[in-house]
Image (cartoon, rainbow, N blue to C red; front, side, top):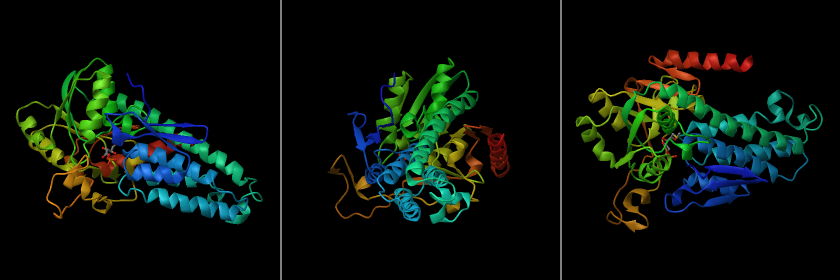
Length: 366
Ligand code: MRU
């Protein structure tokens, strides 16, 4: 049973489960200012696209709360500066930008009034009132992600056969979201529906999100899990030991190209070679309709030390050249279906994703 929460907001403080310490220790970082949230995102204490988005939303609440001014123009400039700092923490997962943009729409100037005039004068919102609205919006983002996970689980579970060995890469579970997870949410829902599910978890070099986090989550849930190193996935498939693959996503372009944890692309190519379905589970907030293809997705490159060493010990010669992209892009042609919180979509994704967006916007307007 899950006894922890990825993050928790109470009394003006965001508590973030420090995922760098898992599975050894369950410790929370108390964030009382937005810089602590920025730091937690940068060092992957909180990670996974939807979780980063929700944490950043609360980060903006903390940053705005600390602004002392009564001057509307100054207040808005301060909030926008904090928003910029939060968005700059990690570039690939679009949920971060999406959540911060959504928070900024709460600011009065987005209604179309003059910045300075709009607070206090034009629409009657003082900085204090805007601070409350920002908190309500962050809570809505968190709650909607939680509910979206549940729906995604239901939609996705229908694609899973009554008995299935599922390969997953990285951690797209409860730790990466506000709810039961995206890829692991589908796996949880299928398991709860009585399907005979077993999971193969890629360890996910270099930071071992699969070994440390996915294996931990699945064991707590009582779902059989077998850990493999990343380079075993091909042989696993060749031996007929996996029936399908499900992964999460950090950003999906309008044509269905998927950025996800480094190594995902290789798994997708292998799935194609072995005739296995390759599913991606992600909420609508992970789809970047501004990008026509995956070519334009910014890919984070992280510190060489993540590759040259582990747990504080060097495993490579001092001074060796390192390339450490944290994500890769899987072309849409390798993706069997995308499981979203609004339903499952199939190729051609340029059309099916656009339709999904149009339908969800018309639902919102009703
Ligand atoms: O670097 P991370 O751990 O933040 O990368 C996370 C992933 O790549 C996940 O698969 C993705 O964010 C989906 S999480 C629901």
